[in-house]
View 1 (cartoon, one colour):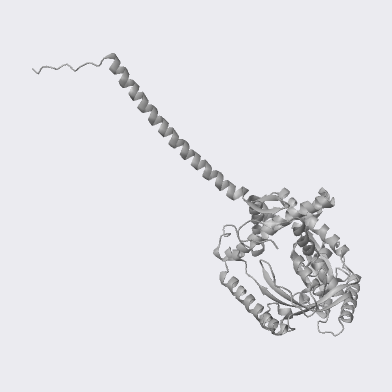
View 2 (tube, helix red, strand yellow):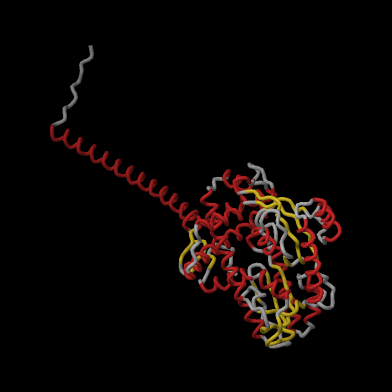
Length: 450
């Protein structure tokens, strides 16, 4: 039988020393593990906070020194895209269809413009002491998201008439005669059918009694929308002047916001009625400042300039049309060189301008009053340039323009057509100047303030 050899026994001091060494090793392991864990968790937290910052708190723009967080821009972009989906009839689940990508990209700039505009409106309203009441907001909410069923008869103004004022007076008189006839029996469908077929210059509706169907805000030009917004159901308007001519208008039905597909679409995408009313408040402020600007615009003799221009569209880099952007830059260089070489401005315009209305006239756009050019820098430039001289090119993120001043008149009578154009651009004219006043800057890459 094998003899067991006894193992040496550790002394108390040895056992204590080994126990202490093991405890130190365990402490080191725990410390290292804790440090690594804290580092990993900290890194994850930093990454999460950075993602949150980039998505929500990165400044999208600056208005009067106040930074607008990106989350406001993203919320507005979602709002604009829902309207896009509604207008294009995009069914749920097809929002990311590749065919929509290009147009969705263009809505990014629209959304940023809207956010900037809203902050400008807030400051301007505060400075002017304008407060939108709940009743005014509710009324605007009905306008913004309700729908009107409309019919009309259009009388155009003869475009080739030698005497523009006489042609306008003739068209107005014809429109007045139409409204008087329709008012004799405003709900008589046969009467509308007959007058629209015989008198209307709108080829799209003349054969259907002038019917335009249901439509919401943004479907018509400003003057037309103002009329349908204030007309009682069944009433026939006085002649309404727009860029198309004179209209006799009737609203036959109205739908409230709760009954429209647009509002149902917004609710489906998570927008609340309160959020839509917040948007309607800005609609009210736009209308108020537009009304004030129109009231302050000139109506008699004012300083005017007769202009020609060469206009080039510039695709936004955000749209991804890099070739179009490059082509526009090349065209600008060619135009500059030809102007510097003394080539006739009208000939250059006929070859290069992208304004189809003025191309055949050598770029001439006629007499211009203050208020007809919404860009503040461009307006200042043309009114300080001597007759016969060309201006420096005026570049924005959307276009490039160079003007030639043909004539100046310090006190020229304002025409009806000019009043209409001033009215149409009144709000944008006012807004452009407010952006300068409030020192607006866009901070997202690829966007520039106008």
